[in-house]
Structure formats: structure tokens, C-alpha cells
Amino acid sequence: MLKGMKANLPEIISKGGKIALLVFLFWVASVIGKALIHKLTQPLEKREDPSSAGRVKTIRSLLGNLYSLILVFILILMILDIFGIKTTPILGAAGVLGVAVGLGTQTFIRDAFYGFLIVLEDQFRQGDVVTVAGVTGTVEAMTFRTTRIRGEDGKLYIISNSSITQACNHSRGGFYIFLEVAISNDEKRERVEEAIKEVGEKLKSILGDDLLSLPKIENLSSFDSAKTVYRLSLLVNPIRRKEAEAMFREITRDIFLEKQLKLI
Image (cartoon, rainbow, N blue to C red; front, side, top):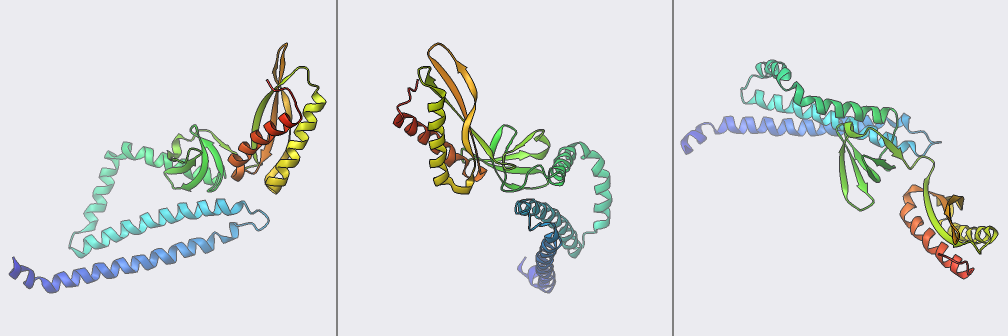
């Protein structure tokens, strides 16, 4: 065995060197190609629209993934050629096998098609806060097949693009927070509105520009002979939605108690 290896050592070194060189060249091609994708997509970044950066980032990610897949496929074919394996029959067989595995690849093609439409229609981008497939969270990454969302519970959800039949993008125009408070019918609405105004002033001092609208009475959720339930609303920057919701509840409680409003 050792004699055979020694006899074939020059050939092994030659093939190993060729493969190493190919891998290096394809790595260089990958770096250059992705840099070119970055440069070609730069005009899509509108300076007057900072949010466009998220869309461009998503497009770059998708194009980069596709480019990498093509490079890997070509690299595998060239390595097979180095080992003397003819790739022409493989490519021909791939056409025949394509019919056989067509049903299996339908899902992949459908996922890729839906992923392309999501980006093309700008339904959501990386960094957006969305609700899709029953999951609310931040879009961390998108590929041609899947969308990765970091849920509000901290878990990472990987959702196939074809299963996204409806998407709610909370990052377009802000994130609404709702809060219901039950007040005794003995209290006048004017006192409730004064308290809500103070809540808004305090939230503004904390959230600053991330508070997109002051809290207000959205409607009367319900009422009976003892109490009236007010539905309050607030619009904030989606990035600070969880923090704002907690503060909204806490500050509303504190100020309502300070005003001695009768909570039920």
C-alpha cells in the first residue's frame, strides 16, 4: 500500500495542488463577486430614505446566496474533472433526474419564488418588526428559501417563504400599543384625559423621538353600572416597542393612582 502511495505521490500532490488552487481562486471569485454585488446595489440606497438600507441588505443577501450556490456547483464539477470523472454524463443525467426529482424540488422553487416576490414588493426587510405565520419579531435574515425571525420570546423562528401568506409589517408607520383601564363611573372623563396627558408628557421625556404619537383614548371598550373601560393607544418606534409597552403600563398606573382616580 505504501509502495503504491509512493508511486502515485506525484499525481496525488499534483491533484491536491490543483484542488487547493481551485479553492483559492473560487474564494477570490466569491469575494470579488460579493463586492461587485454590493457596488451594483448601491444606487438602490436612497439617501432621503434611510429605511431603504434594510431592503438593499436583503437583496444583497439573496443575490450573495445565489452566487455562492452557483460557484460551489461549478467548483464541484471542476474537482470531479480533476479526478478524471467526466462531468458531461453527470449533467445529462441531471436533466433526466430533474424530471424524477421535480416533485421534490417544487417546494424549494415555490419558496424561492415567494422569497423573490417578498423582496420585489418590499413587503418587509431585514431589521423590520413583522408578524408572519403567527410569529411577531424582528427579521434577522432572509434567503431564497426561508425567513429568520427573532421572536419576542427570544427564540429564532425559521419560516419557509411559501408559508408566508399574510404579513403585518409593524415598522411601516410605527407600532401601536393598546392598554385598557377600568375607571369608576364616579370619575369624569375630563379627569381621565388630564391624567393621560401627563402620562404622555412623561413618556415623551423618556422615549423622545421614538414616541411617534401621544397616548389618547381610542374608544370605550365596555361599560356597566359600576365602571367604564377606556381603551388607550400609543404609537412608538418598533425598535422600542417592548420597553415602551412596559413603561406605558407602569406610568399610567402610577399617575392614575397619584390623581386618585378610582381604578376597578
